[in-house]
Length: 234
Image (cartoon, rainbow, N blue to C red; front, side, top):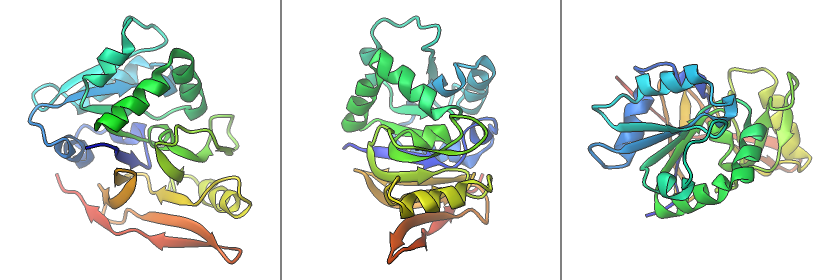
């Protein structure tokens, strides 16, 4: 088993809601009664309030939560620590900064190995975008820009916050049209796309009107192909 990914349109929005059914769905994907869940808050500089929110959402009793801080690192053997996890959950924030820190510390290589071994990779916003080849980001300031150096565990691009930020959709469309981004996927804020072995198998949502799309160019026009979304309940 390998290549499991659950990429959501929002990051902090999901983590800070301990009752979000997406958390239960995430745990169920592993097929384990008490999975180990590792939180990476690198994208917010290991913001302690975000780490606390993670523990409130993934509290002990339903799983074994842990976190990895890279700005105040205490682990010497990152590889062993990460590879023993069942789920790696990446928080929202600055995607570009997180990727740079991971690469500087060799975590990008470890995450690729964990993914290949079957660890479920998940997260929203920056935590969804980082796994793809590229997408739209506010990493470089208030004006959205294109990011084209994601980890590429799943081919193509990703646009989070499809319904939550009016800049996202037009930038994503234009970047696909002019070739800065490959064809890819878009997700509303409380929607998550599920991939197995880099193949899309569906989408889930914590809200009734949540949307997910395949987005690609055809004959000089951007096409949005709806993805069927399953509504999650508490």
